Image 1: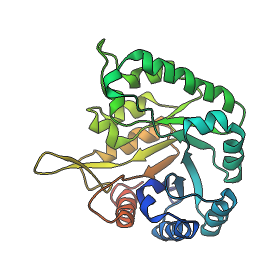
Image 2 (image 1 turned 90 degrees about the horizontal axis):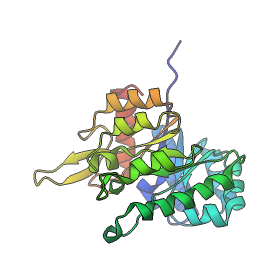
Image 3 (image 1 turned 90 degrees about the vertical axis):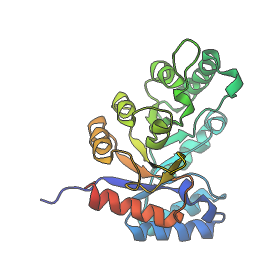
Image 4 (image 1 turned 180 degrees about the vertical axis):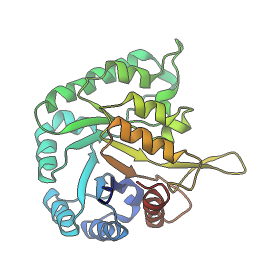
Length: 259
């Protein structure tokens, strides 16, 4: 019996510059489907009617694996967000992060955010839509007492909230992505696959998955043990064409790493 392939999605933030209009989004989705992707994460790009996005995805045979939605929309337009995700048959959404001022780096600021995000969890209870948090690297920046925001999030966020661990940003912050993926076991339905390379000038850069220095066999093994369902390929910026980056990343995951 052939091994069942893992679900791999394209994070649309990667190609946001090519998704200004519904027609652009349709073209991008067609290219992504032709590469062999199973789905997308809706994020970035221009406005599009929810019904039109559903028509595009259904027409291409792409799943809406997840989305990124603002915390204010989750709090103030809860039913609209729920209805749209049900329309797309999408069970997962996440906020892109919390970005307090660097000169006000205190646990109390993060406590206020935790309280607000836990309100979101309460609003989505019973909806069938799971809400998550996407990390960057600043969550690993310590407070004066030595604690870090990411530790606080794991300790204090409502257990129904999940973690969209981003492999690049954890590494950028000096962490081991496998450590945090493992900590998120049972709370990580979607993970962001993003690679890091280094320049001769010692600058960290994003690149195609498999083209950098991250240990993908170990990361993939840890994701499987943690219960990840969707592997979402993303690159915020880089030298390679964005669509080429998605294609090479997918080919590497399937053929080089056997995902």
